[in-house]
View 1 (cartoon, rainbow, N blue to C red):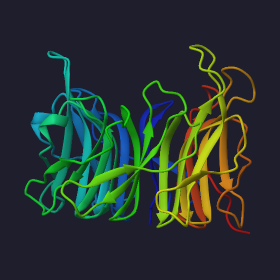
View 2 (view 1 turned 180 degrees about the horizontal axis):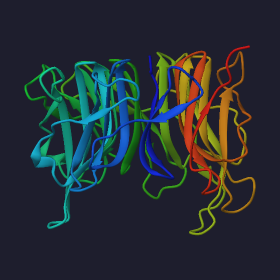
View 3 (view 1 turned 90 degrees about the vertical axis):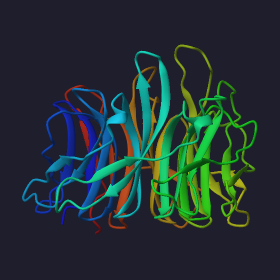
View 4 (view 1 turned 90 degrees about the horizontal axis):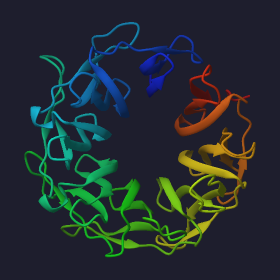
Length: 391
């Protein structure tokens, strides 16, 4: 069966690409409903259930597409039913704790008042037997309603965490599903340290009570940190600042494979000029196996800005990004992998020369990892890179 999908823009416009089951190295363009504008996220809780979120082309409203079970041959996506109240927004993240428990988050924007508000939707009717899946508006905290959500993860059907920026204070914000569950679901504002910066761009969990969020400081060089979930059973949950190395200006991605096996990636700056900023080196932090709140800096090649990280296992991980080693404003893709037999040293992989940058990777199994990105020239367009087959 087809188990891999990629969403985004190619040289021919908006696409969802699927991996052909008859030719594993071939990607085909899926059939999308009219009015699909821009897609920013995708989640597949099973091999037959997938949802993609974004914005409609005609009305600028939040849009959710689902994979039609009735399609044959090339996969077909249908336009789900979303609340009309979200007519001025877009959806940027989606996560599922199970095939029937999915949540989408985003931002509602009113051109008349220049105000924004958090959107949180939940899957109300997942069945496509009698029609398209239906989504309902969740309840979000009023104090954080004018903020926005950057990342979302659901380690279980009843546990979800969303990170971003709060509208009332401009500080970092983490929302979680209230317990016990309500109908429609209610999100609560978690307790975070008072000095948390303006942006929390990534969240990852290895289990319901083991979660981490990366922090990108607002104009304060070298002060990036990571928050960990200290008391998941309290209402609301509490997060604390971990012990981390110095020198990171941005940590934009994090992944946790198992308890104690977590990696966060980003970059530091050689200079902080307005023009010509170049990364001093790819920064990779790994979680200490002896302490759940202590991180150390791994050994990684210099001159690389890292944008994403994914793992197939605790010992098979890839960090993706780009290098400026060819000169100012000349981008070339970069993928780093864990050195075999270690958990703290990374080396540069060999990738096609036409790669401009590698945005994110996914590993559906130890035998296959895929990376999406873009070519270094306009003629190349979007790229999907695959690890070579074993042997």
